Amino acid sequence: MSLLDLASVRAERQAAAAQPRKRLRYEEMISFIENLVADGNLAPGDLLPTQGELAEMAGVSLITVRRALEELERAGRVRRHQGVGTFLAKPRIISEPGRSGGLLSTLRQSEEEPPRVGTRLLKLVRGAPSPVLRDALRLGPDDAVWQITRQRLVDGEPKILETAVIPVALAPTLDLHKEALTGSLYQLLADRYGLEDHAEEQYLEVSAADTDERRLLRLPARSQVVRLRGLSVDASDVPFDCFVQVYPALEFGFYISGATSRELLRGPVTDGWDVTPEPAPQRRTAERSRARRPGPPAGGA
Image (tube, rainbow, N blue to C red):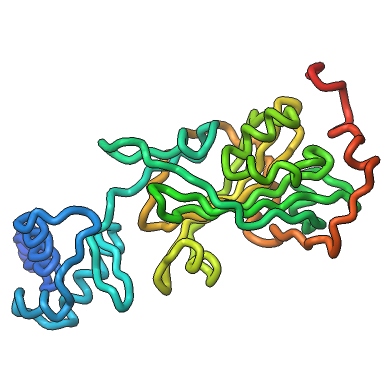
């Protein structure tokens, strides 16, 4: 092929690329649904017509409708519930996981009132940490931990699963304050045990929700979640909380302000975050009275 022919082919390709791309049928269906929502003044939480009704209204196949709804769901604009229907999604809740304070101070919704936040205590057990947790919390081989599992409610709906692992030596009487665990855990730790969050390091991943996560967060099958694992340390650089927070991936956005990593989380942080419950709640009086940590007396740090 001559250089002239090559130039001609290149010019034809450039001209073709400059032409508006013809939209695919499912893309046209997305526009149809968007117009339907706008014309009908539908609001978040409203039920859309069934797939069959949408196909008939638009004159397209069910396959086209399903693809359009899949794309809208992937973008977080609709929620599909098997056996119920497809609903317009609420705006994403914005979480700032690196911001200190209780859950309410880390959540916001665009151009709306702050969300109402509540808590259900699902489990408080004492047990032996996995080797990964023991290393992260700098514990000895016989040191026990508390494992606290809570369901966080946003505007009355379960939206976040939260598990915290705290050394018993640092909070020896935590089981006596179960009623306070429906509020701010960090406030309780600060008020009762002088444990204040000075720094955190976090690891974020997106993966499929497991059976318990789907049940507790009321998610449909094959839902994705954002799983945030982290470690909190106090001003004396003592680690006191390994935590995992699970968020529905399509309902949350995350705002993260960077800082230099201290590499508090060493090695893989996706496996081995388990606690083996003790067979019986046998506690020694001496354990409750021992110092919460080695080092200077309280108030000296």
